[in-house]
Image (cartoon, rainbow, N blue to C red; front, side, top):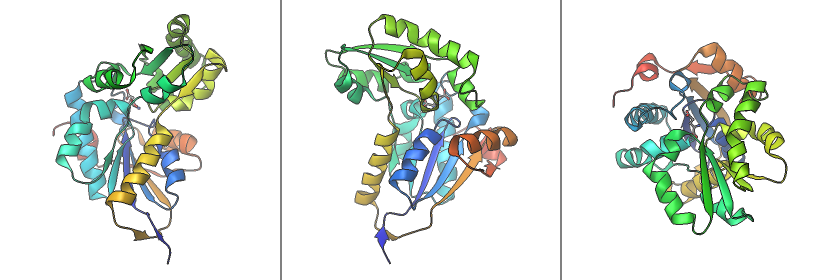
Length: 273
Ligand code: DGL
């Protein structure tokens, strides 16, 4: 039997955005059992207080651990900013979190001006301020909150006129400042990358963190958990939002037909820690 790092990985996001990370995790860990929770009944997280997001992240993480998760991936920049420290204090299993790709963007820029598209929650967090302090150096960082974009992705409106208008409106001030590198600082936005490209032009570099997070997960499994015999790849989805809508969107964004289960009522509706 071949030894491998097949494991059960619990992944969550405020909604379907984390599927952009799940695609990278599937590539990095082809035989892992993947559990995904879309908290679409509470999306967006970007305009909610950190305490609310902490409570949601705690309830969902407990659920994923009950389902057998060996590691948790917070596939959400906003939930990372609000809840990663708390989750790491509560649980001893590996917790991989994500934040906007400031370090690679700073390395990539030629104009010396980098733009960050993210939720207001991420941009206003102490964690984001610390990230800039650590990596921005001499590079000018211009940030832009993007209310409404997450909702467009949740509706599957990846090409709609309204989505294009929002993107044009949010990127115009950044381009006017001389940005040549744009950070997609929310896991919903990689699904809009083709449209963002059309709006901003091919010469602008887009960067996101999905692949790096999957590599980090792989490293942590290798160093922190014992090897297991190879497993059979599988994936299970839960949503706290409308079941029909969840089935439709997750099938589009994941590919193929996804049988999405409803999160148990107590977890889908509760926000208390
Ligand atoms: N996908 C999320 C992120 O990476 C959160 C979006 C939201 O719910 O506002 O920040």
